[in-house]
Length: 308
Image (cartoon, rainbow, N blue to C red; front, side, top):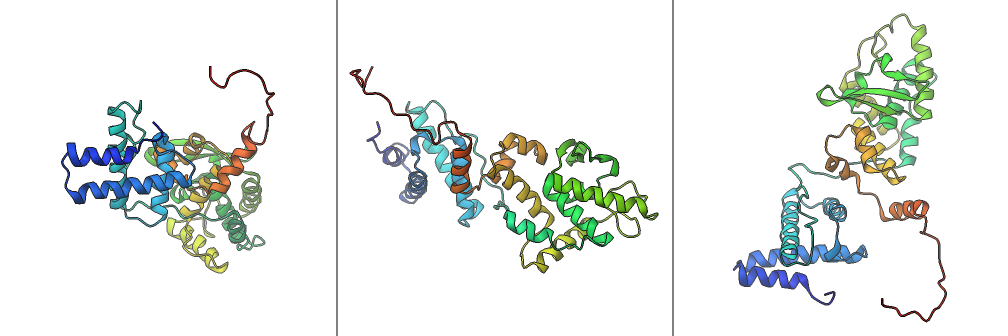
């Protein structure tokens, strides 16, 4: 079966049995050839691709700058191809059946590297009150992956510094508990100590202005953008820190279900947009965590036959 050209068989089916016009079946052929080339570069077999691998292919198309319309057409082609293989008895399940085509505006999230995060966070002057607050805001956005609207609505009572946990109030009034790292806890402790000494800062909200008023989304956006400009980073917003949070967790081996819960995504497919992890990161994670990744077992030669 490995010697059979299933792409050619599918195109023959479209031409002869379905009677598609030349332009149509040639379009299918180009799309499938593109998928096959991607699979071969990834050391994968087009016949055995999983939904997760097809999702990675979809993200790679977005990174190449293809429009949502083009990506949607290619997904439709993949669905048809695998349905053909399923009906012909070569597959037990169509891996592209529930693959979601991108909506208008689909894009690959912008994220910062870990060194860029360090550079960005070095900008606020933590020796002054507002600088300490600004650093705490940056730390919380990156440490928890909060949306900016969730961050500005955090109350002092939502933070448990001893446990390193915060309660986030997300879309649809849904609450979720998200861990905080040591750096975020450290700067929140320092900021909280300064807040306690300032009579103007009696607002139950955590992050407030000098006058004790709630910060707006625009003010937090301006803060992040200003810090980015000062250290030479472009196109950085509070949401960039949310993207970086998810990306860095996945790069270090976190499972997508846990990241989904921390981000407050209702659908796992939304979280899977962050599967634009480089092959090097994937390989490094595999080698670190798989018990047989670097183990070489030399089997003893026996007279047993190769087949049984």
